[in-house]
Image (cartoon, rainbow, N blue to C red; front, side, top):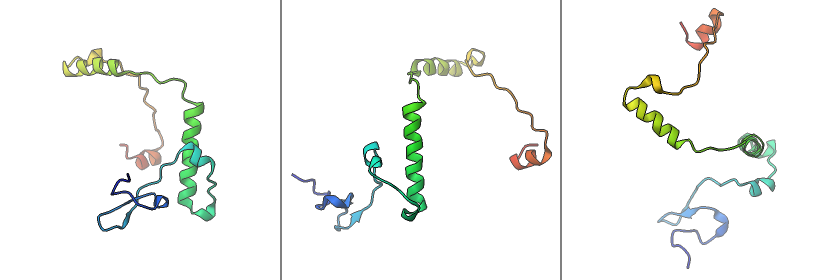
Length: 112
């Protein structure tokens, strides 16, 4: 049985509203769909940028992510220190200040 809100034409890739008009929704890009798509400048700059961005993200996910670790317990512990006002117990990265001596660059960045 078909869902009454779904379009009867599977090629529309959208749902119909109460008045029967097609509502648009973004297409979902998957690696298999992307493999069959070849965006060119003639397709429009937006489409080309989307495919390029997707390829960059896919490459990053495949080649650059070494591992993913669940740090929920650590975050919970750190939050407890914040709630207790124990800021000296927080584990934070060391920050080095990058001095900007050029006055023009400081103005462009909105720094005093």
